Length: 329
Ligand code: SAM
Ligand code: SF4
Image (tube, rainbow, N blue to C red):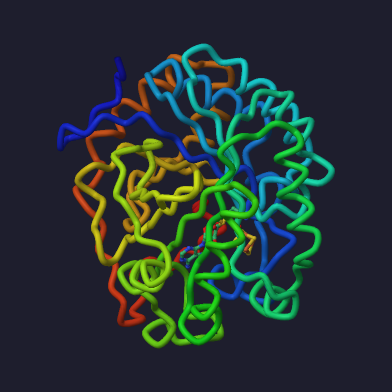
């Protein structure tokens, strides 16, 4: 039983923890080209992150996802994974990554107890990949996907953000790639987080319904009731094991079933992606080092201020001036 129930009766079972705000990429929808990252002293230490995970699992959280920034650029990640992977009660331990570092790290992470990976991949064209990520090398990410499979990760999922005029002509190619590699794929609607970064979001926005219609022109999609405790809605194709998911914060509001909270790399507990309500857990942990019970009590108290829903719009208006790398996608 989870001890974490919010004011609307929703039980929190899922924690997304950003292990760093840094990244080796600068994806156009996520970061500015020139970024100022947090000074190290403001970022949680690996020990603090491990304590946080322990507190949440003892409170009934069953699923933890490490994200960022790019988790693979955080030094010592493997030791954190080992510690969290050993927590009793944790059923699902996942990470979202750009995949570039998986060639080197996949085996150690799998051995440490990480069970699932989401790997971001928006295009299969090397030049486009470079343009969308500003610094990324597609070949390394493709190697990373295969290294993850070789390391024993099953049900790897690709995440693709589709932007009109940039990669919406690759929807079917990405689905074919997922089928060929025997991985799942989720399509994400762009969210208005952070300031407009080099493109007008009202023009690039591509809804999940549009993406789905494109896929159905070749592969009829059958809805499934499968859930990974996340916001994806999943579909199957008749002739493949790969699942197709849609994450649609705009067109299909998923707040009613929200079962998750986030912790930023600075240790701010965010109760909702689209609102500014937060609690400074780092300050608490540094004032009372090692006091797990106090930490747990603060987390339980915070649940009362989880808002009912978020309010995103597609007209390019920014309501939350926080870059995605700060919150963990
Ligand atoms: N660096 C890792 C990665 O790219 O997978 C993890 C962090 S990243 C912020 C998590 C996910 O958020 C990625 O799949 C990325 O494509 C997505 N993302 C970033 N900015 C976004 C935005 N404005 N709207 C929708 N998805 C976004
Ligand atoms: Fe880095 Fe991920 Fe943001 Fe791209 S989406 S800039 S890989 S954190």
